Length: 310
Image (cartoon, rainbow, N blue to C red):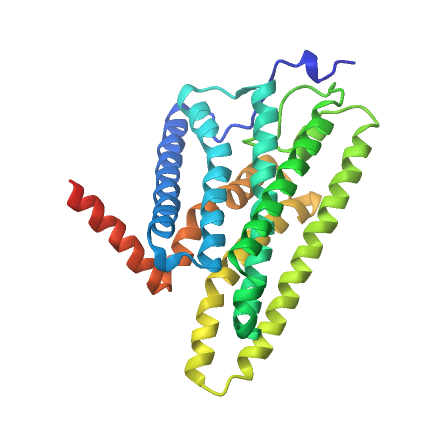
C-alpha cells in the first residue's frame, strides 16, 4: 500500500485529447479568466476608491469580488497551462494547495453570501437599527469570522485528506483537485473519518442555506407591508442581485454534488465542475452591476480616471 508521500504527482482530467481542441480550450479559458479578472478587479477598485460605496453592503461585495478572484485563480490557470503544454500533471503539493485554497475561498464565499442576506434583512426590516447592527466594527468582525473559519476548515480538511494512504492510482476524475475525487484514490477505511467531517460541513452549509431562505421570507413580508409601490420596487431591486448570485452559486453546487450516480461520467463531470467553479466568479460582477446605478457610476469613474491618466 502506497501513501500520499509516495505519490509525487496527480493526473487531472483533460478537457480534450487533440492538440487543436486543447489550444481552443486554452483560448476560451484565457478569455473567461481575463473577463473575471476585469469584472472583479473593477468592482474592487470602484468600491475601494469611491467613498460613497463605503457601506456594509459594498464592503461585503468587495469581499465577494476578492473571493471570486481567488476561486477562479485557484483552478483555471492550471487548467490553461495543462491545455497549452499538453499535460495532465500536478504535483502533490500543488494538488494539496489547490484543494486548500479552493475550499477556503468556497467556504468563505458561502459565509459572506449568508451575511449579505442578513445585511438585506436588517436594511429592509429593521432600517432604524441598521447603523447599530451593521456598524463598521460588526462588519469587520463578521468578515474576519468568515475568513478565519473558512481557512481553518480548509486546512483541517486538506491535512486530513492528504494524510490518507492512496493505492488506487493517481488519476483524479476532475480538471482540478477536490476532496471527493481525491478520496476515491484512497484504499483505507480512514477515509470514513474525512467523510464524517464532510458530512458535518454539509450540515453547516445547509444551516446557512436555511438562514438565507428564512431571511428572505422575512424580507418579502417586510416589503409587502410597505405602503408605497415605488418603495417596494426599490427594496426588491437591492435584493435581486444577491438572490441571483446565491441561486447561481447554490444550484450549480447542488447539481454537481447531489446528482445521481447514473449521471456521473467524465464528460458531464467536466461540464458541471466548470459551471460551479468558473461560471459564478465570472458572472457575479455582471449580475451585481447590471441593476446597480451607484456601482455603474463608480466603475465609470474608474474608467474615466484610467483614460485621463493615459
